[in-house]
Amino acid sequence: MEKVTNILLVDDDRQEYLLIGYLLSEAQHTDYRLIWCQDLDEAMEQITREQCDVVLLDYHWGGSRTGAEFLRSARNKGCRVPVIVMTDEMEAEVDRDAIREGASDYLIRGRIDSQLLERAIRYAIERKQIELKLDHLAHYDHLTGLPNRMLFRDRLQHAIALAHRNQSEFTLLYLDLDGFKQVNDRYGHDVGDELIRQCAGRLSNCLRRSDTVARIGGDEFTVLLGETANVTQVAALADKLVATLSKPFRLHQHQVTIGCSVGIAIYPDAGSEAETLQRHADLAMYQAKQQSESCYRFFTEALNQQVNRQLLLHQELRHGLRQNQFDASYRPRVNLLTGAVDAVELTPFWMHPQKGKLAYTEFAKPIDESGLATLFNYWLIDRVCADISRMKAAGCAKKMVLSIEPEHLFCEKFLAYLSTALNESALDGALLEFEISQTIVNDGLGAIKRGIERLNKMNISVGLDHFGSGHSSFLHLQRLPIKTLKIDSDFIADAPQNGDESNLVSALIYLAHSLKKVIVASGVERIDQHQLLRALQCDQAQGSYYKHDLSFESLCRYFVGSLEEAASR
Image 1 (tube, rainbow, N blue to C red):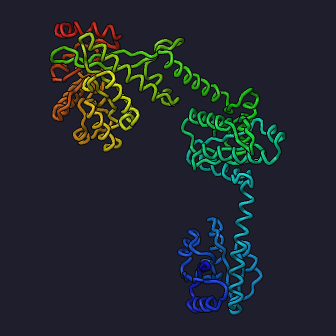
Image 2: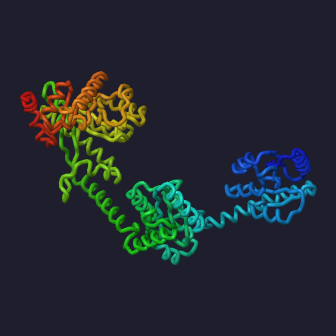
């Protein structure tokens, strides 16, 4: 069955609609469907959504608007539907203007018959298809199907305009294949062409749909990354591109291995104009090509040094995990009623060979950026289980408290590893508590609740850090199966001397008790703070006043005398 050709008639004359319908009914070779539209805005919406195959337009539209304006607007919106204009008489000026504005053909009312109309429609559709093919050839590389140099330039200019308007950044990468000429010379152009095609496919698979990869000639490619959030992420992607293109290729019974050099320029630091960005990306690529192995280089030396420092830190972190350079310190949570230690909070640190002891806050972000978070979390779980087992053996088992990131609540691998570790250590989950930040609770209550419930099934409790700071939803706290609330240390600092702060701490303690939660005060450094919290019936407290950042051996010794020492105060 032959395809139906949809024709949109844009004309406010009913007689013209009836006439065109009659002429199309006389057509012999094609099945036509005529759609009548009496509104220019509605017609524009239909053609921009490509709901028709061809448009018949009354060029002398009534009122202040004209057919020329309609054609111009359609062209500016990238309309791909051919438009045939109709006028009452031959007008050379109108003919020229209509074609210049994008019309496919020109018909005169009163001289249109069925054969002429059918021919004009058929030719308009065929010419538009040819135009689209030529446009594709002009803007896309015939070998890879990627955007070519011309289209890349257009998209680069668009990216600059968008970044300038939004005050944002984007990244331009230049890539050159290392060893392509040798492959092309040794195995011939057919193998060389296939290598280019496979490289294009691998590059495309590494990128997001919002990014652009283009072939700008020979063995050179460019990549446009959208808004750049993190220099390290750009470096990681560049490293991924280099690694991807360095894997062996299978080409017509031949296996070959090449490399890749990447130059990186970030807008606006490396330039605010297209020519400058391209020149600097090309220069950075040239610098990368001077190295003995495939690599990438940023244009600015400052960025190069920054990324090198970060990558060195990532390597040191990986080495540190392998060499057991990580350790932990402990902060006792003292029961303010009995003076005994109710729980112990574990805080990891890194004994760096050159920099000495580094707090967790100094390497938490690099751990995540380097992709080592999973391995580090496994180390933490193993360490907590080992510590609990050692305390049980010493006869002083206490609940261990460990801060975790929110995604751990939903991570199947993390939860599976945790369950296995507890079973292999023959430990009760009741001896473990995970602590999450209050800011997490304000995002995705349902998912947070499901994650906590899964931990509760392992008998593991969950606490909330920084209670009272930022935006709180007490309804959320009531609905979530959270056992412990920790008051932020900022509230404790001046509470003994400040009546308002004291009243606020009292209110937080009252609220926690009304929700049947255990309330913990952090950052207790002085006796007046301890006395106030005890008078306000706070359940537990931690801080330098009770001992702070103890080693495991010191912690065990502290257990023995904690009750007497706390009671004597």
